Length: 168
Image 1 (cartoon, rainbow, N blue to C red):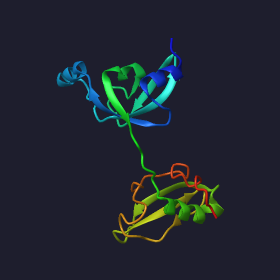
Image 2 (cartoon, one colour):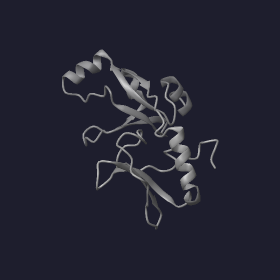
Image 3 (cartoon, rainbow, N blue to C red):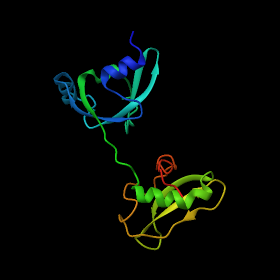
């Protein structure tokens, strides 16, 4: 039996990284034509190591018939590559938000970008635990915080607000 590390190394999978299926074997392509699920362009990542097997999880697989969880051996019929993710915020955006939230850093629940109710402009809202939200000034759509999805809640860790060397 192979260890978790041996299996991950053999398949070229790293913990904390995301991958995308780029190609299927001829056998799988025939099965897809006959109605099997198509995993090409599906994203996946390492999930866990249990019962001497490594499990991966596919994103956005909502079918009850086809589980989003698979053994790593599932990948033997596919080609895949690591997804190079861009940071959500630029260094200037991280620096600004880190400076502004420093006094409240232990009270922050979520950070999100929304479209303003009164205009088409956007703004950042920081939700504090058991307190009122902090509303930031409006800005033109797609002019700032371009990496943030609208209405998606982020943690300060997801936005990497504490990874900067220069925090005031």
